[in-house]
Length: 385
Image 1 (tube, rainbow, N blue to C red):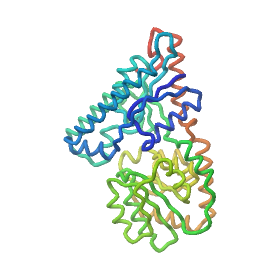
Image 2 (image 1 turned 60 degrees about the vertical axis):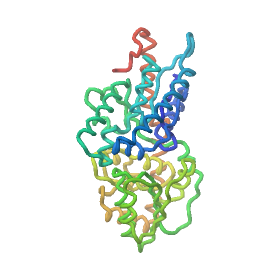
Image 3 (image 1 turned 90 degrees about the vertical axis):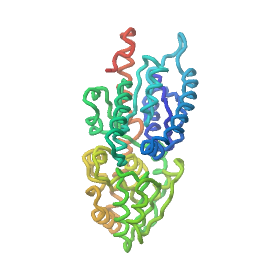
Image 4 (image 1 turned 180 degrees about the vertical axis):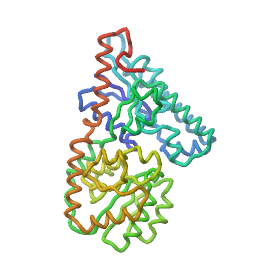
C-alpha cells in the first residue's frame, strides 16, 4: 500500500499526523509526504475568525503553500505504468487542504483527519455570532463532502458528525509518537521528593487550565510542585488562579525536548474543561504522558474512562478542590503513585502506540485497495462516499 500524507500540517505542533504516518508505516504501508507547513498556529487562525481583516495575510500564506504542494504532488503522482497511490491522507487542520488534495489526486481515495471542525473549535474558543457559526459550519460540510474516509479520535466525535457521513468515519485514538515512549524508557526514576506535576497545552477553554491554577493554590503549602508549559487564551486566568503557588511557568518547549521534559515528572495532567467538546475527546497529553511513564490525572468523562480505565485518576471537570485532593493523595502515597505510573506505561505500550492506533485506518484503506483491484473501473470502490 502506498499512502501520501498531504497538506499544510505541522507535526511539531500537531503530532497526531505523525502518529498516523508512523502507524501506517509500522503496519506495512509505504508512506510519502507532500507537506508544506503553514507556519501559523491555532491562535492565529482563531484571531482571523474573530477579526476577518486579519485573514488576508493568512489566505496569501495558504496560496503560497498550495503552490508548493501542487509542485510536490507531481513528484508522487504515478506516471503511466508507475506505482499507484492508494490513498491521500490530509493532515489535521486540513479543512481547506482537502479540496486541493481532491483536485490534484483525482479519484484516489482521500482521507481527512478530522479531529475538530471549524465550527466546533470556534464554539470552544467562545467565538460567538450566528453568522460566523454558519460560515464555519459550511466550511466543515464542504470539507467532509470531499473526503472518502473521515478519521476521528473517539466514538463521541464520530457520533457528532452529520448522520449522512458517519458511515465514512474511522475511529483512531490520538496515541503517542515514538519519541514519547523513548523518553519514558530513557528517563530514570527520580529520588523521593515533592510530587512533580506537569501540564502542557495551549490554555484553551477545553483544557480547563484555570482549574489547575486554582488547585495549585490550594496545594501551596503541600509537597507538590507544578510545571505549566505553554501559553494561550486562558493563561492569564490560570496565573491569577495560581497566585502564590509553587509553579514554574515555561512559555513552551521545542517538540524534540517536550517528551523528555514531561518524562521527568511524576504526574501528567489531562484536561478539566466542562464544555461539550471536552466531554467528547481524549486529549493528546494523556496518551503522551502515559507513554512517558507519568501517572495520569484528568477529568472524569466517558471517553477518557473508556481509554484509560484503571490506569488514571479521574476528577470532576472544573473542580479545583477535587483535583487538589487527588494530587495531595498521590504526594502522600508513593506506592499508589508508582502503581499508577506503571499502569499508565503498560497501557500505553499495549494500546497507544502508533501501530495500534492507526490499525483501523490501515484496515479501511486495505479494504479499499482490494476493492479497487477487484473492480478497477469503479475508481474508489470499497470506500463509501
